[in-house]
Amino acid sequence: MKGRGPLVVVGDVLLDRDITGRADRLAPDAPVPVVEVASERCRPGGAGLAAALAAADGREVVLVTALGDDEASETVRSLLPPGVRLAELPLEGSLPVKSRVLAGERPVIRLDRGGGTPGAPGAEAREALADAGSVLVADYGRGTARALRAALGRATREVPVVWDPHPRGDQPVPGVRMVTPNEREARWFVREHCAEAAGRGMAVDDDSLRAHSLRGALLAAHWSALSVAVTLGARGAVLARAECDDPQYTPVTADSEGDPCGAGDCFAATAATVLADGGLPSEAVDLATEAAAAFVSSDCADRASWRDDPSRPPRAPASGAKPRRMAEITALADSVRRRGGTVVAAGGCFDLLHAGHVRFLQNARRTGDLLIVCVNSDASVRRLKGEGRPLNRAADRVAVLEALGCVDAVAEFGEDTPQELLRLLRPDLWVKGGDYRVQDLPEAAQLREWNGQALVLPYVDGLSTTALALRAARVPS
Image 1 (cartoon, rainbow, N blue to C red):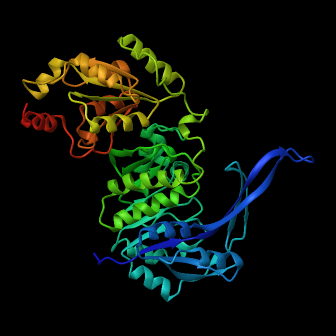
Image 2: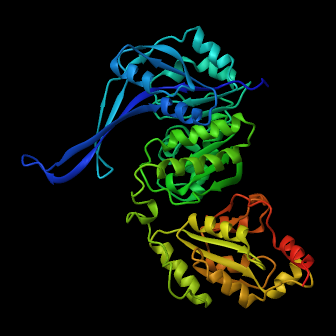
Image 3: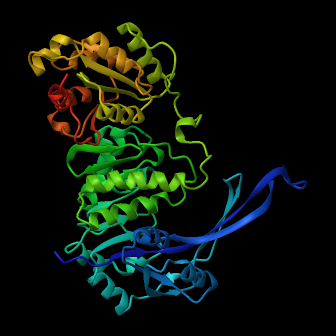
């Protein structure tokens, strides 16, 4: 493995132009909005945006792309930040320009023009890849990655390579560290290249987290990639590996309302920088999800999020009395499922509720439309934890859990595991903290009986009931 070199971004650059204004009336000659232009902004798009984002923390970045002598190419050169060094391929034709007209910060129409063909890479581009400490391929299907495919294949044997694919582009070279398709792209790639998906009982339009993780695993095997991170917009991302039913789901931990244009580039750029610094794919996805959400929120922050989108299944009421009787809880779960929603179950003792528990339950709630917490009875806690536990009796633990806005219902069980309770609830998802592996969860095989999915959420480090209890015992009374 080579020493640390620059992050090299390889891919197709576009010029993004946003024309923003107000639309308060329709044109008299056609039923179209009249936009009164207030401002116009240009920025590098595609691989140019990914390179600019990667260089934002002062990192050395080399952008290998095709640029020409046209006005759009000159504009991109002038807009790239000083931290991005160019290694150019010749461009035969003109650089693509994507112009969006926005009214009230919502796109009204997009106009595309231009589009050249990259020429053969010269010595500068090949040397940049040979000296790279890590590589990000931002493929927009216009030929730059194809022109450097052999060099990219060699790079995978030396440094971490992240590949952000496009249906019009080439498939990733074998051996990349991570591929980052969005959910629509993942569906397309599976439909076109993974015929065996039909044998896994997965519909093309299946929007469940299990389906997204299965698509990621299929694509990781097809591409011979170490991992595939399927990005789900405001829902977060799923990280999958080939032949492994142990996906990691990373939710968005804060509302990310805004313009999603460029969020995929931000995700891929952040993942590449984390891997370049020696991080694991799981760490890269966690940080990339947060960065993409912050990127979206930083622009057009008053846009509605997916949670308020009327086209999505309705969520359970956030206020009012929460169901206590099992018949009421199962009826609530059934009603959410009938509307096409996702029922989530999470379990534990929750003896001394702390910030780690709260964050875990908040993240669990974000994975679906209804969260039911399965809590161990007093006798069950005693068998699992020993004499002196629980510190709080079941009625108190249930009351505290019910007070959390992210919890829709709490159900108590007396066995060592909630398997019998889960058979009644039949949740779509069963979630545990990240100190478990999916294959080690006794509930995982059971969930598959009704095509459910067990998931592991990111681990919250440094917090435990036992540690808090021991610390409290040392405090003088």
